[in-house]
Length: 414
Image (cartoon, rainbow, N blue to C red; front, side, top):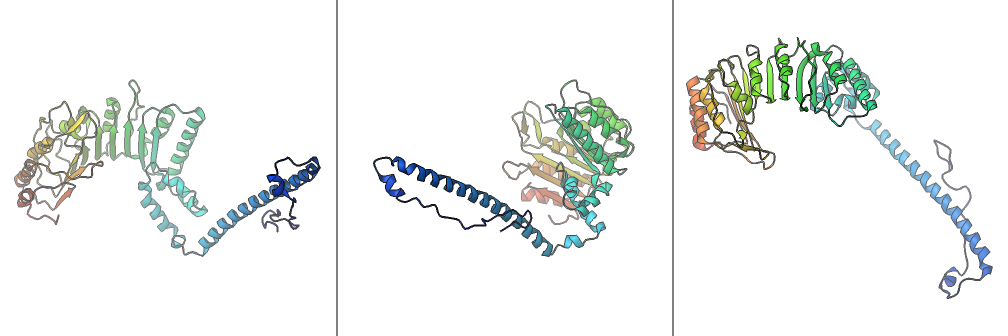
C-alpha cells in the first residue's frame, strides 16, 4: 500500500516469511555451547530477522505519521462541517468583538494572536489601527544580545506603524533603560492619550525627557523616583484629567495642575500630601484612596489633614489591604480614613465604596465604629444624598450600618 501524499510504500509488497530456527529452545537450555556447525545457520537467522525488524520499524513509523496526518485532516474536515457563527459575522461586527477583548490581553500580545488565526482575521487586524493602540513596552536586565534588542526595536516600529495616527495607550514597565525604544515611542508623544509608567531604576539612570503631550488625558505613575521627569509630564499635558499615583514621593503633588484633574487615585503616602494643602479637591469628581490603612512599621498612623471642600466630588472609594511584608503594618484603627472623612465636605457625593483586599486569607475586615461614625457625620454635615453604598469584603456592625443609613436619605439596596 502506498501513501496517498508521498507514494511511499507503507506496507510490504511481499508476504512476510517466518524465520524458523529449529531446536532453539532446547539449545538454550543445554549445558554446552552449540557446535560450530550451527554458526552459519544462526548467522543467517540473525541477518534475516534483523532486516525484517528494521523493515517493520520503518513501516510502523510511516503508519504513525500517516495516522497523525489523517487525524489532523479529520479534525479540519469536522471543523468545516461544524456550525461556526463567527465566520458569518460582518467585518464591522467582528472588529467590535476584537476591540472589546483587546484590553483584557495586557502583555499577552492579543493583537498578534489575531493575525495568526486565519487570512481574514490577519487582514482585519493589520488594517485596523485602533487594535494596535495599546503599546506595551517591557524593559528589564540583564542586557539582551544586540540582535534581540534590534528585533524588539523593529517590532515596536512595526507596531506603531500599524497603529497609524490613532490615540495611543502607552504602558512602560522598566527596571533598566532601552533608549532606542524609548526614543521611538516618545517620537509619537503627540498621540499619547493614556500613559502608564513603572520605572524601578538604579541610581543615576535618567529617563529621557518628553515635553509635548497635547493629547494626554490619563496618567498613571505606578513607581518613579525621577522627580524632573514627573514634573515635565504633569506640566506638559493641557488635557490631563485623570491621575493615578502609586509609589511616588508626596511632593510631586505640588506640581499637579489641580484645575484640570477630575479623577484621582492615590495611596496613603500621596493621600497625606494631598490633604496638606487646601483647594486640591475642589475640582475632583472621583477620588480613590488605596492602601489607606498601610503604614511603615516605625511610623505613626496620625497625620496632619487640612479640611477640604470637594464640591464636585460624586464618588469616593476607600481601599484597605493586608500588610504584605515585614516593613509595613495595617493600622487597625483606620486612622487616615477617619481623618479624611472628618476633613471632607462633599455636598454632591452619590457613591461611597469601601473595599478590602487580602489575596492570602480571603477574609473580610470589620472597620472600627469610629469610621462609620465619621462617614455618618460627613454625610450629615455635607447634606449629600448618597445613592450607592458599596461594601466589598467589608462588614460593619448592624448599628454602624444604621448609623450610616440614618444620614443617607435615598440609598439603593446594599
